[in-house]
Amino acid sequence: MSTYRDLAHRGSARGTVLRTVGSRERRSHLTAPRVPTVGIDIGGTKVMAGVVDADGNILEKLRTETPDKSKSPKVVEDTIVELVLDLSDRHDVHAVGIGAAGWVDAHRARVLFAPHLAWRNEPLRDALQARLAVPVMVDNDANTAAWAEWRFGAGRGEDHLVMITLGTGIGGAILEDGQVKRGKFGVAGEFGHMQVVPGGHRCPCGNRGCWEQYSSGNALVREARELAAADSPVAYNIIERVKGHIPDITGPLITELAREGDAMCIELLQDIGQWLGVGIANLAAALDPSCFVVGGGVSAADDLLIGPARDAFRRHLTGRGYRPEARITRAQLGPEAGMVGAADLARLVARRFRRANRRRVERYERYERYAQAFRNGAQALGDRTPEDPRP
Ligand SMILES: [Zn+2]
Image 1 (cartoon, rainbow, N blue to C red):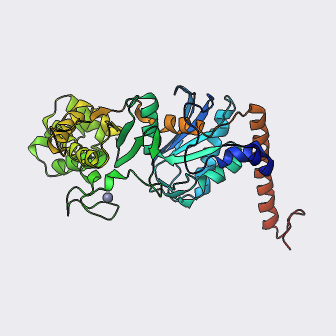
Image 2 (image 1 turned 180 degrees about the vertical axis):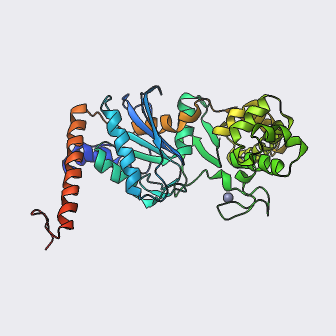
Image 3 (image 1 turned 90 degrees about the horizontal axis):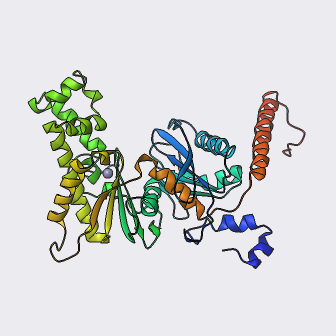
């Protein structure tokens, strides 16, 4: 935290605050300033940005497409800056938190790898901090979602919590005593790639038999499409629903049909749920939390999924009958969890910041853009700008 020596040596309170964005949260959420912050969730297809107050309420929300993987890292950065500037027109923004689908290093400064984006060891925090002039925090999206569920959702009051997000794959996060456990290198919680079936289905990660090949949205859709492609009589209902066009079979459609009582869809969700329970039992053996929160798109199936998961969990739990059982519950905050959590984590590094400063930053951004355009133009003419210091 800031001391007089820091201030004297570095000259500004800002420098001090920025340095506290270091390797861990030094402020507790209880002492963090109760100011609104911006949370940004960068997923594979959508970027969601919102202003969130200290109680987890979303004051305003914006959405845009995730720039294509082929685009340069700068394009994603521009997208983020635009969203934040847009929101800060109407709100005081005291910090920005990013929840990204990817691996973030232990200092939460760099995105080591993001499967859906061009980020490879990308110094995202410093780049954004320099452009936005507010403290920025970068974290994995499952970590931010877990934080949100612990602060405002299904995990309130739990001091040992494990979050599992079932989307196209499996994301995970561990929370203990009010802190996200990130591991030494920042990439803890990649539960989806624990091997559950030796020599099983091939996984894009390069291995076989990963948990997410058996319990995820992708697994659900793969199984349904396989049955439909084999023209199985149990799949007639779903084939009819997509008018024979098998690629139209999606996770939400399967969930919808299961709710309507379609036997095949119910069974497929049961299978996914059972595998979910097996994996959760493994996690309980290793981590022994008091609560598992299941989020992500597939969790919309609710009891059709969580019920079988609870049964399988009880059957596979090590030392069953002789130990307290963890609670398995569905996440409450829905698709906004990652964004809300990112914003709330950002409050740990937030500082008071007024909109007047924000306008100055915007003017500077605009000036930078003109200057860049000017430099480009000058270069095109084989000329150099007078202030260009190069020989
Ligand atoms: Zn894998």
